[in-house]
Length: 398
Image 1 (cartoon, one colour):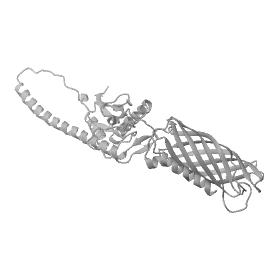
Image 2 (cartoon, rainbow, N blue to C red; image 1 turned 60 degrees about the horizontal axis):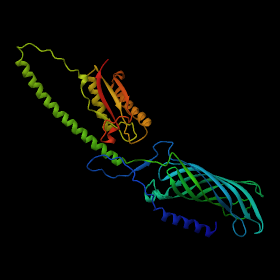
Image 3 (tube, rainbow, N blue to C red; image 1 turned 90 degrees about the horizontal axis):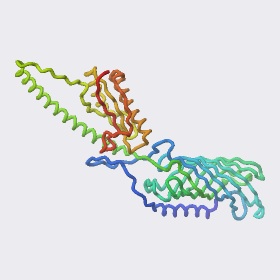
């Protein structure tokens, strides 16, 4: 490839990096807020909420030329391209692309022009340089995306015969955001090939095709990534556990007061021993309020070691009260996922707790009733993250 072409490509990359600091005026992304005194920053990770998210398809056209044994200036011809791929996070993705069209070459003399047809199929690894360096911003106007991969190149209608060459696909893509569902792109693409691609072998150097392309890229469902901060989630979970422990301490204080009341009640009974007995209805132990809850991480139905103590407490209560059943109700926070997805997630959470009670603590499964409320009901309306929870309610055995 000639020096002037490389100079033009690197100049375009430099200008695009300068322009990538321009941002669209858009509202800030709302983040889930948990009320605690201090929350450490930690590293935020981004991912596609659902497997169908962040797929894209691009179509475009431009010109291409072949760098091989030739005389005089290079000749450019029409080229068409289409690709299909997925962004797994804001920083990298994979795609399959097909590029093809006509090629013209001055050989063996400058006045002689050879005509070719070619098709290139490539699998590329794409790196969003702008998001990596400047941070993820879904409203950024211009993104610079270098890529590299493997390509198979087939030339036909070649005066020297059909040729097939495997090589390296590399280039630079510039995405200009039109809206959430569409981008305009400009791309410079180079396929490095073996020396026999044009049917002429005169040296040991590689041959290459250069394509300059532009078009439209469609984002299926719109680009959207969910975020997860493990440090923040752990800190908030520990803060919630501390609050739960405080509530348990308050319960213990109330239990001590209850013991004092029992002593006082015994003394009153002795004083009233000579009086006619008053028959009172004894309250069923199944009317007790169960305060244990099992909390879960964002988009997860895994029970952590810290939450196993709550399941243990429920198991011990059920063993102590064999005439009582327990309703196990799962929830999900309404700020994450669709109603249908949250319904399924809350069912998975409640089902996971029931399996632990049955398998690890030998609780009869017939005493456990599962309810999945998803995000249609929020037991903690003032704190969204608390709603990733399973709660328990006692009831009489039928």
